Image (tube, rainbow, N blue to C red):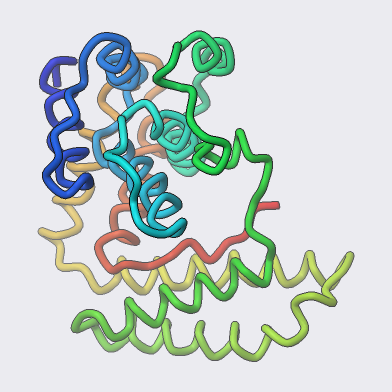
Length: 251
């Protein structure tokens, strides 16, 4: 996708998030979004970063003004970092601090609107993470008609996490490490159940989408690494198709 088309898609998405209020992406904002395209940030990843900013913005009460795309920049980069780590793309990129510092008034947001965990230096605690995972698993369980095997896997995960909740704040050392390993195993079991529920044509379509997302990185990666990245990206698409949260907890 050429940068102009990429910016147009971002502008349309931002307009929808702003309840139809059009905020043009021009000047420094256009350069910022063009940089996202140059980095190879897939549109769906950029949309997820925008969503993350809006979630925090809505949580603060009634909206005060339409959101400019510049406010979403750090969240988009955070989501992109998470996506790259998940699919195994280790690409060096310049530090964003200088670009944010020099972005002018567009980046001068209020302290309560400062985007991204990178700037806030905060992250979810383990109990909060488990609560969030259980809410999302419950939503996935009741929000759609799921194959029986996947329903069973979700129900089992919810029961296990529910039993563990009272002890979470007391987990230390080896006990915490064992529980984190268990979360990774639960996560893998959920995704595996989701993958098994797909028809062959659905699985092939997700593989094709994953390869297309990673196309900008194809020339920088050996064949084996690219194939592994496509497989990881396809698993993420499977997860998203069924609304499954990431159960694994990163410290």
